[in-house]
Image (cartoon, rainbow, N blue to C red):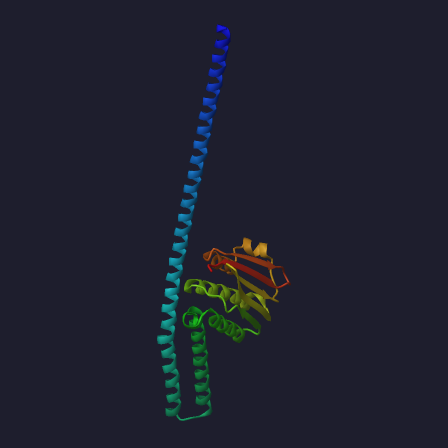
Length: 265
């Protein structure tokens, strides 16, 4: 009888010890899991803070660049443009003072032509540096002007479609404008395209920019390995808004660019 009670006590002791050990192990495992969860949350928070800091640095750099663009554009318009206008006026007055003949008339006409071409170049550069009407009249107006300038410079047709429901912050408007500007500049300089379609639409919380042209295309892998400045600028503009951009092109098959940018409702 005593032996039986001793056996029961032993079983109880073993069972209780096993249960206590199990609870201890469970507590340790739970503590470790909770600790790992908190560490992961802290790491995620730190990464988010680093991303926000990097984003803020990028934005500050962008603001500094745009401020410098505005300053140069104003100087071109106010100082260089005014000087060229005065020079043209002086050339016209010189033609009235000097006795007219075929040589002086031809020379005066050529001087005026050079000055007019220079003034057009200054005006074009100034417009490239400072988006016309972007802040005052909105993204659609500014993009229409950008497309019209592209068609004036190159022998191409640009079709633009912008969803009127799109409403973006001023900084996002500027980044999208610069992205489109880079696409059109690349088309003018490298693509030999005659037809371009460009559309911006908003689908729920995403802004979709779609660009296609019928240009000569290129080998994307080779261009990316060479770190093409145009491709890098387009990619960087999209990343500034935490978006993605995809290039679809082959030699002789034109170019298709799709940029998807998250936006707040």
